Image 1 (cartoon, helix red, strand yellow):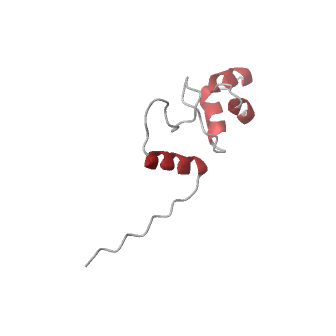
Image 2: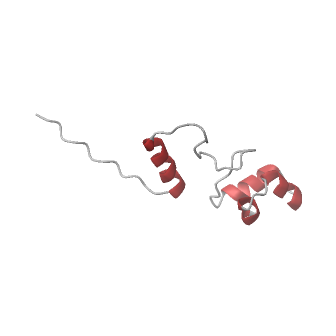
Length: 81
């Protein structure tokens, strides 16, 4: 089912093809960590939307979330005495 979903098939279409419920197919996809598309949009949830300007920080946060990398906080800069 993962390959079909990542190839563009909807959760609903997979559910009907396999005789399962929408919730079952969704759970089967999310347990191994498949990024789900937004309903009717064909893009992963959390993806930047076209036409909406994003700050560089917002883009970096999105990239880090997608990669699953850990973010190490930057040490605080020393405060002048």
